[in-house]
Length: 463
Figure 1 (tube, rainbow, N blue to C red):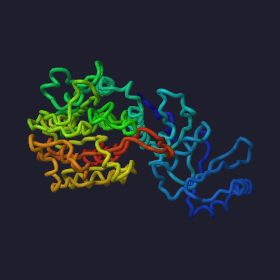
Figure 2 (cartoon, rainbow, N blue to C red; figure 1 turned 45 degrees about the horizontal axis):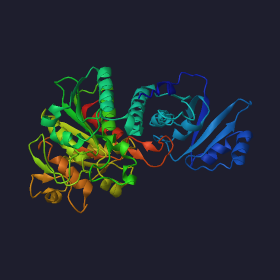
Figure 3 (spheres, rainbow, N blue to C red; figure 1 turned 60 degrees about the horizontal axis):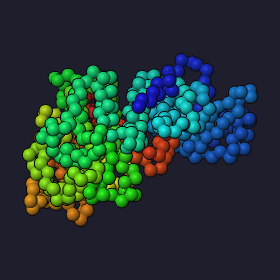
Figure 4 (cartoon, helix red, strand yellow; figure 1 turned 30 degrees about the horizontal axis):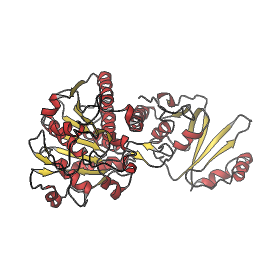
């Protein structure tokens, strides 16, 4: 699944192109007064007001000579200011007048991305944006590809994307960047990663559980572990979800999609890290051998977990993956997971609940989210709720009764599997957009990806 926006973003070398006039509300009247009568007449006929997002086609001196007006709230432009034009303008080349493109390069590229596996798109990419900042093109292209990767993987039906297909995505990534791929399944998974096995053991033949690992980079560089929850479909297990709750559960591998996309960004930019990508990939299915409420599960770490809810399976598979990541003494562990409905109730679809065991790391993540217009919201690893994880018969349980602070207790469960002195951040992301906006269609979405990437660039520096 590869979307290539490279042809859509080009250096401005004076090519023939139509003009997009960028005008703020404060400057609109002065700009309008300076226009020739034909333009003022067109603006009046269209009843254009200087509201952000307002557009108009402006006539030129000749019949084939026209330009575009875009009203914006402010300059510099934001990421999504040009996305609607990228979706709606006729094919051709365009350049801006009145502002530099800046961050809006990404929105222009993503405004022309569509998920096409099952349905022909209404339009194919064909709107080219010229920029006088060619140094920004490569980053915009990389981010657009990574975002499209997340969207396409999450949008794919579960019948077409199971653990084996996630493994194939990781293998393709390893081949592209010269990384090493290791996959653990079967008897080795049973003994080495018992929680991953337990969650996925009821899946049909061909959809068996596995731990997918990719390693890349110079071993002398700081070690970074990136983990993504790969539940390719979540029925809820024996604690079965209602049909309404199961409808979008193809997206329960959204954490894995984010992790794969981030790994691609890291390797593509040659970030000076030793990358360890881990994806525990399962289907939480129902069969005679499905794991049960009340089962006590072994773990890779050696703890025992009383399984109080088979629909709290994501934290189980992440626990074994976090243990594996910690065995190599990384300086930083990051995990992405579509983990709890509680996070969505608290923060809605747009804000990934972000937990970190280090204040400096949390501050860097939040700042990067603001800078990249990919906001995060920090929630606490509140020690006072740790007692909710106590079990009468095991070392801990996976899902406390009552539902209080569900996102927090899930993060506290994960913390039990993180090495004590290792920096760690956990993003409980929705990976889905319930309604569309320009450049951001309804469906699978990268939420938190750009924020984490910005933090990593700031931490490790561009190569």
